[in-house]
Picture 1 (cartoon, rainbow, N blue to C red):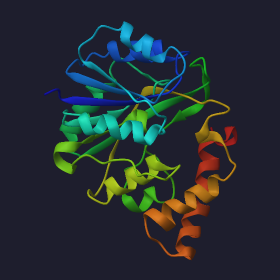
Picture 2 (picture 1 turned 180 degrees about the vertical axis):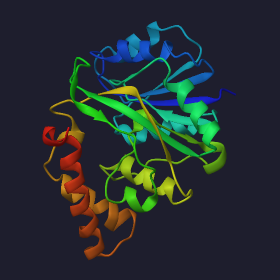
Picture 3 (picture 1 turned 45 degrees about the vertical axis):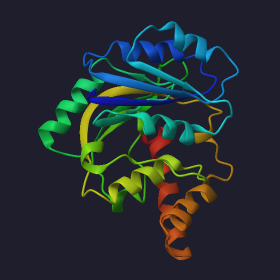
Picture 4 (picture 1 turned 60 degrees about the vertical axis):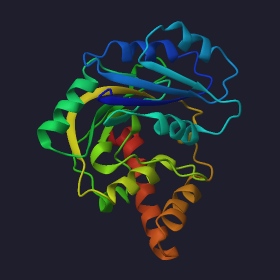
Length: 250
């Protein structure tokens, strides 16, 4: 079995996919498998993936679009690596990402780690300051802001089990991390910039319409908090989110 399983959902990513693929192939750590689930793309995404003849890349193509969370879960079901990490089909890793992360986790003896990442425009040019991995993450502090990004985090499935993404949530990554942190005391920061995140002006994650409601449901429906407690954490999350992405604070 490979040491690391990389999980990627893909949907109509032909514009960026080749650079993402190259960033994985350029990794100095080579004992990995890459499980890509194409979520019924209508562009050349599947063709581009199939052009890369590497047995470590395992592509699943579904015949009905189910969203990124479901696509990740399909890949997670098939993952055999001890360490689980995520890379969306438009993002980018520095060549040492896997080697640095796995070495850090072994050195610190932790189940979860995350690194800095650059926040870039669609051409991978930095748009605002790097996101800093400067605090340990716990269940309690992750309630107020999601410091964990999928592209710069890794967890040890041998010690905590696989953590799947919930159905019916538009904030499925935050719910997944909260559920994982219920099992462990802390995730550790690796303060090195190891990845590049593309910030798309029209991406789902950047839309503000109904986002407060979606975040409220993280606490109310998935964490089973009271109404008052759910709104308390939603307001905290909103304030921290503004500071996270505002150029005033970056």
